[in-house]
Image (cartoon, rainbow, N blue to C red; front, side):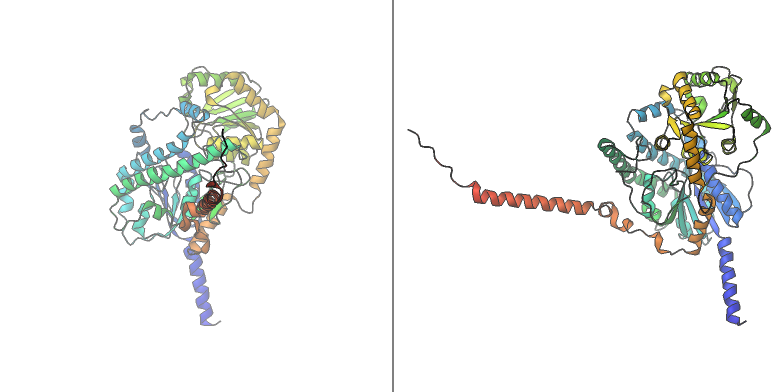
Length: 531
């Protein structure tokens, strides 16, 4: 074999080896345990694949994983809530009531405020920041993965490492601002904003309001979020020639979005927007013995209730908690297993025998169980995906942000019913639970969606890993650059052309009027003869 052939084989093996052992910096600055779990699953899989992952996070590691190294912003949660007006106890019921009263402008502005407060907290948490900034200036990362859910807060850190390839990720479905990173445009005419409590086929009034939401968000980002982040970042990072946050954000080459066509609204996507909805769903494990016995002992089945990791059930108040427990008691033919974050004795009344409460539940494994008949959920994106993956119908009680759009879509698909927390009582709650369990159409529809959701060439996590390694293999691929980033919002939507057409029509109209007045307007009117 010629020596040149040996050299080609060596280069090929070396190239493959490099891709399989890339040095990756993962930036996760989201104060949400569920978002951490989603990102950790991706980071852990990268580490198991052979990559070396440095994971910068507000959350502490869960166990040890070879090749996965945490740098933690210590006490970020405590510091964030320390300055809260409510002492960290967010009034979810009040916020939900405001949204249900069509004050959903609150939702778009709330995201900006939360993002700015989160960023300020992270940069003031010196432990994690000092550690990553202490890396040598010539330290090389092959790739940066950035969770952009609450803005590009941590992205300026990349300046220190001379801008390797950047991938944006989010567990937050496909948010309206994802186009800020890689270009393209959302279409308010048929893509409901993530806080919009509206269907995809909107009335004129709904489309107008949806357009208003997108506009308010865009203005909020432009004049509040980006300037606020710039102020925080430049206060703590003394980098020479640091570009603006928007410039850094637009260096992103690819987005991994936690969405899927089977369960979300159809919309046009850029070629570098990859859907990996359900990435967090793992192979179900055997349930713990006590939970398994309880789930299987339900005469007609068992119902799971969980409001996620951010909405704490004990903050719902005694009136709501009492209604929930009395509803469960009124349905003795079913067992109810409830993720309740406080001790059972803190409940306003004693749970009936068909109720089990626990601070932690293996949600994925419970939803996979055949005797689990329905899921009472806050309609968060991750929980909804898990429920539909396993074909379980839902009773959705939305509180904030994307939960409204998610449950609206579930209702449209016929896989769930929606309740308002402010109007919850025993009769309404009992009727909703019986509806989704005893009306077979909900389970049938959920199982159809499950089949569509799972019918793909690769599992979502495998797809995510493939595309990450695609960027490592092809850092300069042409799909990364959208012309809309250069054109800007007005030109990419043809608004400038519409303005020119309107101006031309006005000019033509004025010209016709001027000619008419010149020809006919100055003629003397006939005088009327008088005696």
